[in-house]
Image 1 (cartoon, rainbow, N blue to C red):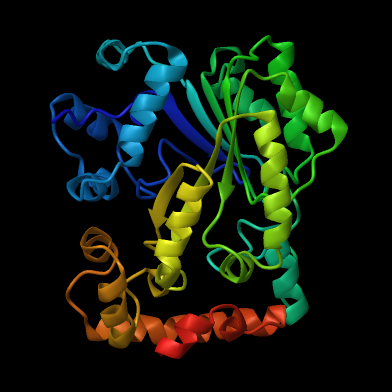
Image 2: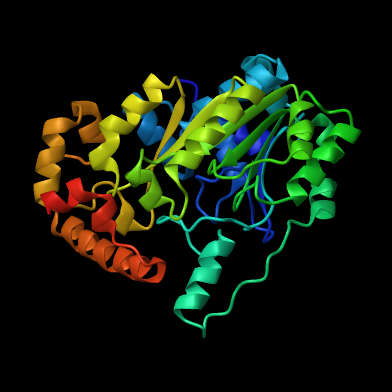
Length: 353
């Protein structure tokens, strides 16, 4: 098995708060040179365990996805990319840019560090909590690290990237450099209606992907990504498909939506939307397995064996129950601030507990 991954050599993720990493799945502290050496020797760096776990289950990992993507969009075989890495002929070709935390949603799994709406909500609930000032990534600093003319893949993330107007200024810069062939991915919650000028800018790029965050359908979506509306998402999906054939979904799996896993996957398949399944690892109280035993017993009956073993596991521990109780406390606080009740959106889960 080849354990090579393009990200340590050719990938970078840069945040508006100046945090930087080669991969979002790596621990905060890591030695990239050590990871490179191990990979080139055919080893499996422990820092990359999240990908190894998925591959062991027969699921496609982020490592495999990124390898295939750079191979395709660079139009360069992976074996030659790997040889470039061996010869230190590398530079940033895949950039994930979290340009600001400006966002119009207060998702359950998010917080005020990643969403301006969460910051405002926390302030309304407790005026002693200051609203974080909105900042945009220092683009001049990024330009010193990244040659935008040579980028093969650019992913804009938020916050909500389509809600952040300065992202379109950055896209104009890309067009001025003549790089209209970059694979442009907008990771969006699907709730923002684009202006005519924004549509015009996007239409100039030859390879656009809208990766829409969808964690459930109908009320499940509306609870997990409050206060967004499912009907608005459906309307925007129609427009996205007018702009590009490349519309996909980012599906975050937690203990709050795993009961609805089958119907969510069925909806993806019916609508021909490829999706990336991302089980939550932290906070632990949102992990899929952090559930009462009674719910797990029901899940074992309705989920496939592979899904159950992957996301839940056969062993129930006291810790799982403790984490579930913590989940109830945390979402009760969230619900109080939002003026909603999770039971109204997830009645099937309520019945099981």
